[in-house]
Image (cartoon, rainbow, N blue to C red; front, side):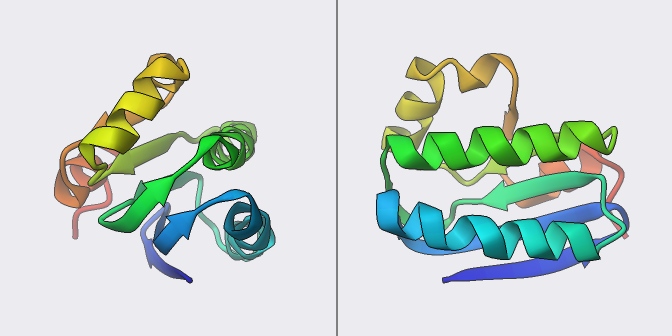
Length: 114
């Protein structure tokens, strides 16, 4: 359902499938635990394997944004479908959360390229 990878101070979060209310609620504690156990300050969500996300996914992202911010970090989103990008923009998240076309660009922006 969700995979994790660490690159320097960045936690790469790769969810899969659909992010509906049920799945967002199941993902939240897994993401929180992975972030808490890591030395990371930033999180990058790679949506390349997500086919659909509803508004509950937005709430989940806002919570993770706040977690990263508490550690002096930031949150970024990559590989969003057109529908997800529209939801991201309409929700107002585009004003506070950075987004990039690719994982590589986000990693470079956060200094996580090896």
